[in-house]
Amino acid sequence: MRVAVAPGWLVVLLVSACAHHSSERPVSTGCSAPGTLCWDFEEGRLPEGWTPFRDEFSGQLLVDDTRARGGRYALHASQLVGGREGEQGGPKKTVRFQLPKDFGPVLWGRVHVYVTPARPASHAGLFNARYPRPGSQDTAFEALDWYEVATYQEKYMAIWHPPEPPGFPEWVQVSDTPLVLDRWACVEWLFDGANGEAPQAAEPRVWLDGVELQWPRRFVFADPPTQTPPTREKARDFTVLEAGVFLYQGLSTPTDWWLDDLAVGPRRVGCE
Ligand SMILES: [Ca+2]
Image 1 (cartoon, rainbow, N blue to C red):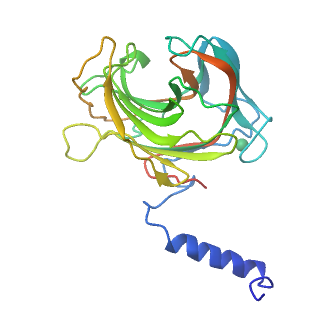
Image 2 (spheres, rainbow, N blue to C red):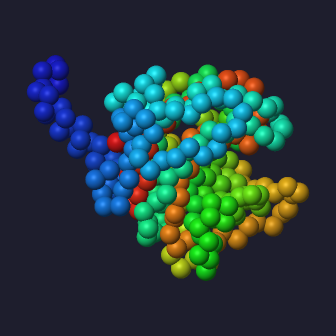
C-alpha cells in the first residue's frame, strides 16, 4: 500500500536506481555523446543527408505517420513483395548516408524495428555500414568492405562482407532468436573494424532489447560455395550507411517494416 501512494518522483528514483544497479552492459551514451548521430524522422520526410538508393520489385520506402516508436513519424518499408523464396532476387528499398570524415573504425548502432505480418524466410537486410579496404583510397560504394544486420530464416543474422558485388565469400552468423513480430524491438550492433591488435576486424555483435544474441550457426557463404572464410579486413574509417529493407531472395507475403530512432556512434548509444 505504501508503494501505491508513493509520490511519482520517488517511484522514478527507485526505478532508475534499480535499472542502473542491474546493468552489466557497456555504458550507453545516448544521442548527446560526441560523434553520435540520431534520426527520429520527425521531419516527416527523409532526413537531411539521406538519399534513396536501392529500389527493386514492389513496395515503397518512405517516412510516414502510420506507426512510430517515438513522436509521430518513422521510416516505413511498406508492402514489400516480389520474387520467390529460395530464388535470388527480392524487393530492396533502401536509403544511404555519407558519414562525416574521420568517423573512425568502430561503429555502434541501434534502431527500433516493427515488422508485420510474417517473418520472412529470405535474407532481409536492415542496416549496413561500409569502409574502404586497407590501404585503399577508393570510397566508391562497390569498393567497400561492410558489416550487416539482417534476418534470415526468421532469425536475426549478422554478416561481414567483402565488397559488393558480389559481397561474398561472407562470414555469416545466424542466431537462434526469432525475429520479433508485431511489436517494437530494439536492435543494437557493434561493428568493431579496429579490434585492437587482432589481425582481423571483429565479428559483428548484436543485441536484442539489451540482450546479446548468440550465434549457433556460423558459416561461410559464397556462390559457388567455399569453406575458406574471408579475411575480415580492418577498418580505418566507416564512410557510409545503408538502411531500409533489402531482400536477397524473394518475398511472397507483402510485408511492412518500420524503423524509428536510428542512431550510430563511436560508443554504445543504448535503446533509450
Ligand atoms: Ca519518430
